[in-house]
Image 1 (cartoon, rainbow, N blue to C red):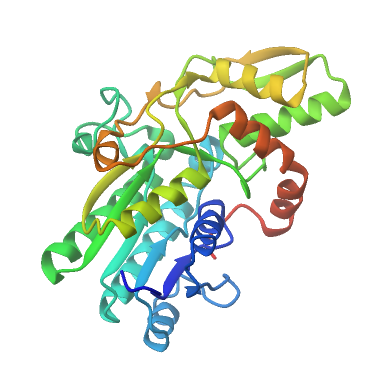
Image 2 (cartoon, rainbow, N blue to C red):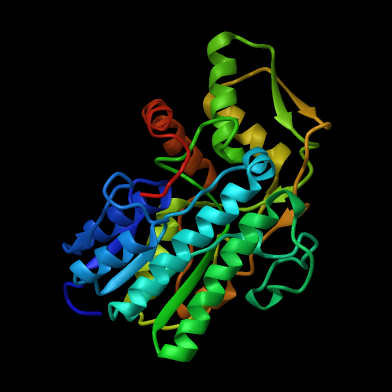
Length: 320
């Protein structure tokens, strides 16, 4: 890259976007361009085109998205599909039209089939049926990475897709109706501890296995990709190991200091049985995640009161 590229971080207020700002700013990148949703609605094609036409952007990091857990994916499938499709098509096309050659698109491990072989390789994409509870969101993310591949092939751009596993860390969403499992467990354990409750209810059987990546590790992987001139392709980003939801709940309870009993509500959905990423592609290039899960949960919980208050104000969307 140029010594000081102008980097547009789409979704800079969200968990991923804010981690990208921290990572790049702390490593000498001074030309970071951001816009909040109030200044730029990424679902508005004309507004996005006007923004790119007015700005000199060298690199785009497309972290803006409509995100959420099992409940919101299941109850708002049209919202998840439409908003994610609109954001990615508007930004990717406008970036190309304005001459942006480098772009990083952030997908999700939910793009892989529900009963995918484990660990999941990038080549497993589209090899089977998706998990029904988040299929519209997954299809939108698949469309985004396919757009990157198509623009590279047709126009010679250098657009890369990173597929992170389950993320956690600063600026996570602690809303119980729209958040993911780890922040939801942190909030439930905290409130149960504060109330002196004897039990804590955990959705599902506790048997599904999940992999968790600190968002700062994803930001570091993004900088690695940019600085090592990775120009195309799909890359899984994870830690290469997983644990059951029961084990996760026990670990969260221990960090928070909740000493009551964990009750698993088997009437609630489990989702995909297992989601473990094969991270060998980036590992062969020299990148690996650094943060230990327990230490990551401890650091995340230390910031919980501030993050929870922030999301009560801003809501769950990370578009902007």
